Amino acid sequence: MVAAANLISWAALSVFMDFDEREEAAILEKAVRDFMQRFPPEYWRRVDSERRFPEEFWRAAGQQGLLGITIPEEYGGAGMGMVEASLAMMAVAGCGGGLPAGDLLMRTMVFGGLVLSRFGSKKVREEYVPRLARGEIICSFAHTEPRAGVNTFDIETRAERRDGGYVVNGQKIWITLAHMADIIVAVVRTTPREKAASRTAGLSLMVIDAKQQGVKTSRIPGMALRPLPSNVLYLEDVWVPEENVLGEVDRGWEYLTQLLNAERISTASISIGVGDYALQKAVEHASTRVVFGRPIGSNQSIQFPLAEAKMELELARLMTRKAAWLFDAGRECAFEANMAAFTAGRAAYKAADRAIQTLGGMGFAEEYDVERMFRDSRLFRTAPVPEEMVLNYVATRVLRLPRSF
Image (cartoon, rainbow, N blue to C red; front, side, top):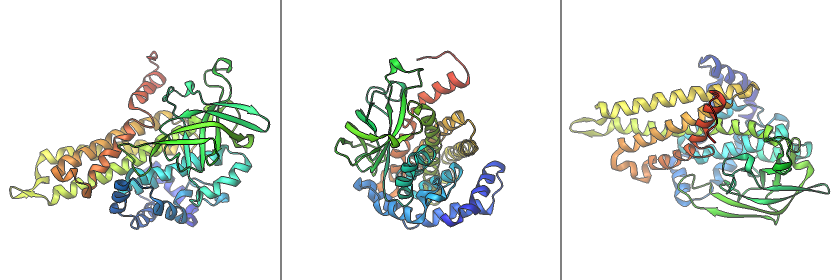
């Protein structure tokens, strides 16, 4: 698939723009779906039940080139953009991999490959990016803190300048795979808030070697994304060499906004895949389950909610495509990315909910998968950004209404 990158990239971009079903774009999706046949729904059902990291998928995805979609060719990747990454994440989620499969792609393609390739020093790019593309190392992203929550400007994790680098101290929470990570992209404060030049100044992004002694984790067992646990992350006198600063010191907010836009496009893509899968399961059941002498899908009380779910998923897909295209074109896409994440999260949750209702009692059985999709689809309505904060953003930044907080 990596070898086909140049053939696919611009054609895939075109299909997102003019909606013509181009053959080259279909090749990318087919390649991903063919790959996912090696990891059918029962595989994901098992790792979910066992709360086990999907090691086999992770290794195979690296060998196949899936993890390197957004990584430049000079570092062993495909040199594609968020358009293609979005297609891949939708496909792995939509084949039954759900959130875990999509999130693992996002973790490398966005938090690792895209960010390190764009903002990393030559040393960082050469040391980490090729290994990310091959699936040899795991990258985690540390943003949220216990007190600050989603308010980036209240981040307290502090990086103090020392000879040749920084010493980092602080605590993060809800950090996915921090306990397994080889590197962590962390948001830290390099200038105290009271001394920063502006509200957005004084923050930096750094790559932390997660295997050093001062990095400690405590797992948080949860309802969703069970194969990829979240953690409390403790950073105690952690050493970060100055070449591991991403971009310029104190200008991390500028880089973080790009990362967050790509993250929202990613979660939207994964949500759509989850919704597609749940809806497919519901339609199959409604078409074959016979009650009172006819398929239950012939009843409008079954048909109409599924039809609504389909339309809402398609609307979310369109906005996700637009946001991905804008991102790759280097244009402002915060509104579109937030809207995509918001609408896709809701559409996926509705599709999963209606799938359970359609399957009835069987919807609660693990073997039918929709209960897993229901649990996982709820996550992206709360994280990485709550729906309420998306609405705040649209109200104050797009509609220019007075701030409510």
